[in-house]
Image (cartoon, rainbow, N blue to C red; front, top):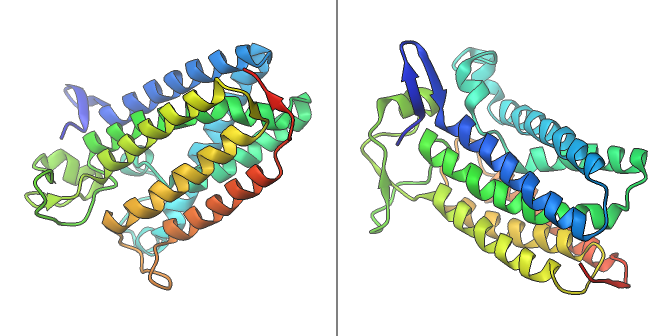
Length: 259
């Protein structure tokens, strides 16, 4: 694929990083749109988006290092390196730490908890959909070998150097699977948030839909980490987030809100 968008001598602009930045801006635009419809002030929402994004990146990186701790300890992977900086990390871990940051900021700013999470949900979905295209371009988060007609084959040595993706082998395009799943989730959430709904319903729905789709897609992704009871660590995290989504739906406010 195209891990480097622009190269000038030793300098290059990573495609993944560029798309992640675009994903954040697109997600923020969608979030502000629905925040205004919900009567929320703009400045606290922008600040919350920045703080949660930074916390999410940190959480994703920490989980990535913990998952591959043996390789970092032996020196096979370098902690302070360009490859580590450009790696996608573990999205669910980033989401969890982002939620912790959101809980702190929402409480500090006295924002309506469930309504705030609701307006962020569609932006999360569209941002993640764009970000997974960045994963495809970089070569990370690749799938297992397959011979399905829609398999993709990486041939760019730069992608192998950055992520270790196998070259010349047809693989499941799991990055596209997840991007399409998130795009569909985004459409569903936008359709639902525009209609009367109980506060907390949109975010709970996001957690459930994403967790189910990620759980299924994980069966087609390549995993270096050992399975636990037949499931990957990411699948166990998906189950936990699914249960959280169910809990949010069961404890949402009953009064419908029209946005």
